[in-house]
Length: 207
Image (cartoon, rainbow, N blue to C red):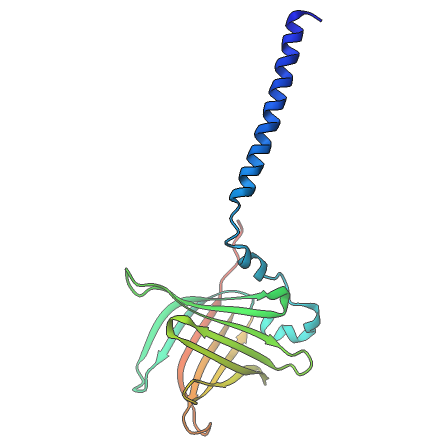
């Protein structure tokens, strides 16, 4: 081998060694700085309902996706306050539960969007659904129970003062539904409509 050939061979070997060391260093650095702060969010989501739920999953499973929301809040004097927002539904916890997020957009600059969330699950033996509702910024936690009533979905519960609550999904269509929130102060004899929210499914867009 010529002297130049020997030199080139040594240079190539050195370069290969340097590259291997650089790769190992980069891998170690990446591993050391890997951000695990969103691992919980990644693990939470599920692609589909758990097989054990069977057809019971369909009652709320049809809402999976994103909906544009026209919120209406009805005061005792009949006046109505409107807000815009969106509602998101998705399976979580390996498909054993369905989570929803109701979000309203800020009213003005400097304002913050508002969130409430629910985790709902079904007893496959009875078809009864339970909703655990949380609204951290309002310091509210509720438990609601129910299921299908005719062509509606109705959930019943109480607030922290004992007032009866009735939440329902109405006029359900593939691309729309109406959510109503009612209260009763006389043991369910009469009900007052306090909230009526019109939802429209957001169309899928190609990336």
